[in-house]
Image (cartoon, rainbow, N blue to C red):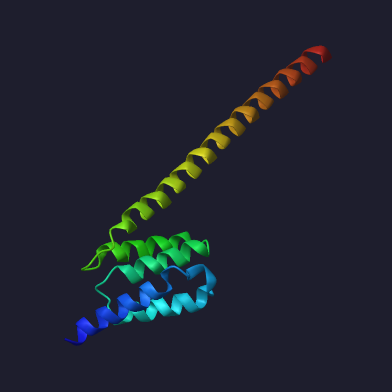
Length: 128
């Protein structure tokens, strides 16, 4: 019975501040959702809210952790899956962009090395 009361309190606490999350300090919200999570650790909603706060603070790894906890809870918050996929997709896009930049840089360095090698040969042949 106490668990049921905890669940109700957790839902009330989480819903009360969801719409106004941007109006309050993230630290206050973080401690607030941590308390809600302690009251009902089997509910994934408070973990999802902690993940959203981590995203606002640009802490992607923390957000992944909280989204995973939200999905692994007995009562998962299923929207966390889409948010988690968004983070992974963002990471993949950044990786691919960096790989393209690295490839272009390597090609430029190879072209520069070839030109340098060619000019060194010309200088060497001119000295003969």
